[in-house]
Image (cartoon, rainbow, N blue to C red; front, side, top):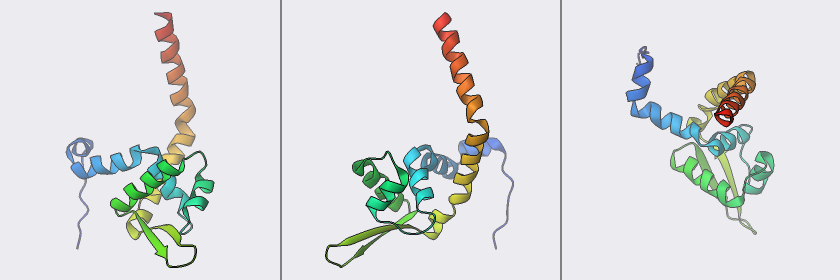
Length: 127
């Protein structure tokens, strides 16, 4: 049985697993690809269409990285022509909640961040 323990925010700084999780979400394409796969497996071309603005090379690198981390599974079908699909693993599905929460935060506070950046740029330009 697992016991929930409370962690102080400073524990996140020292915890390698926390850094690993932040690294996974720090790459924009990781979260975007996982979110795009939330309704079921897709072929690379379908996935690119769902995501938009991603090159085939970057998508391939992203899918390999997600597969390496156990978040996505690649299925190849022996058809003519060969067909490949990518889908979320059980582990990959567990990241959908945090991605959704992060997206909600961005929607709610994104304008404030942009305003702060504009203010910092104006201050820098004036000095």
